[in-house]
Image 1 (cartoon, rainbow, N blue to C red):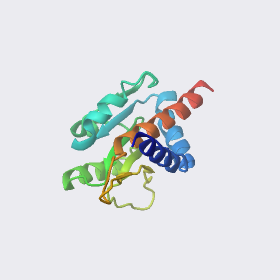
Image 2 (tube, rainbow, N blue to C red):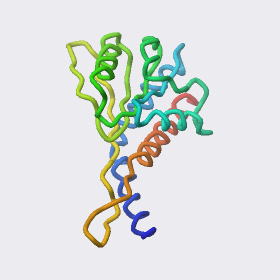
Image 3 (cartoon, one colour):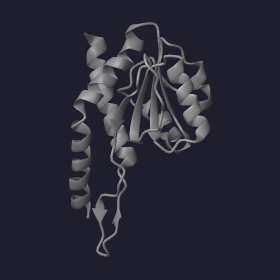
Image 4 (cartoon, rainbow, N blue to C red):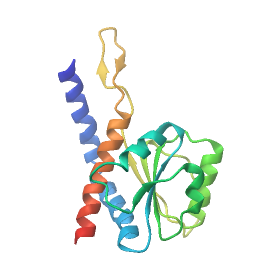
Length: 171
């Protein structure tokens, strides 16, 4: 079972690696805050809030990146960057909050298995989206599947962004 799970995880990671351009764009966007006068904030709706708090504690995470609660995202300025962990199932209020951030020209990166349905007007910067798999990956004898890779995929994509971001700010 472990070998099958590992093989399937490699496919998950490969599908994220296929988004190399989006990951690089995300890293460049986020790095703008650190080389400027801003901060990078990581936020999430309820489901991924513990993950947001955990990933910013990773040893590879540079100074200037911190976790912010969803309700505090309105305090973010145009000099800052916001990484949102999302599954695309945000509440109406959370979508309104994100829409308000876009209206205020706050650059966003959306990371997760789904993305909220936001509306855009001319001149508004669209968020960069990195999508991670969320379907179960390990087949059982009865035909069902288990082993949801959602959080592992999000951590992998976050690490990939951080590695690229570190390269950018070291240059």
